[in-house]
Image (tube, rainbow, N blue to C red; front, side, top):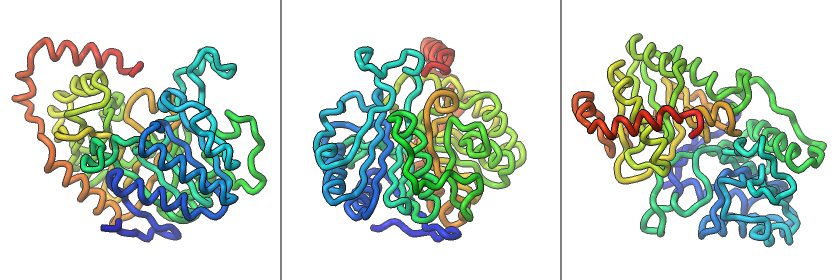
Length: 371
């Protein structure tokens, strides 16, 4: 079934649930590119998914399309520059962000913790994808040989593609030292009629954290958060508590199975505190939760931003923000589906977990700034 298209101002937006919807749409965009394909990705795996995208990029470059790829050295440690030979041979360029190998001439110990955690694809500055999915087979359905990781992506068509293009080239030019394209339109601070770009580590009104806090502070009815590495700071927790005290329903979905166990244990150290403040906490079963999705009344934000110290202070992140009642209803329906597949945490039951387990959780939580 094709995803529903939501018209928001002068843009159209589609919600893509999981890799089975996102990957085909992204590959279709690359195959139909006319002028330019820009890919900025934290994790590209040298598996069936990574190869499919690499080969699609190579075909686009062979057809005369400008292809630029920026991938994170740590997230994509199984990929090296020679793996991109089909793309470079066709005239495209792939560049590694902040190499982690000490023998690389660009290695810098001072910058080793600064990672490019974005997951975005911009095609012809008019069709773009932003979300939590990386390019790896774990996001494929189990029947296709994957692990069915749970994740979200947004497709947007419209002028916000120019902002995403500018965001990409801001980093591309910084790391490659190439001049920016002459036709580059610099990022605007004003939202494009209900659809706009949020990013970290910006400290302005384009900050993911600042926008989310503002929305929660104004929430009237619902605050729903699905986040794979949920370690909110005191200010963010207070905003959630206050929203609940004002009468809004606040629900948080976190993993019961995580790809980073130490972060899962750190998150679990907060669960009792959240429950005592009236926040409903759910743990997704049977699949790894990797979403970075929030719905606050009629506001939706989906992207790469985790509610943790790394996303706030160290990682490059990108989210899309959308003000749309119809999109919010669709994304909340998806959230409700996940809730049905989850276990709701009961405070009395949670308090019975072993003391050793609690000690491990708090030890992990003490390390939260480094996770």
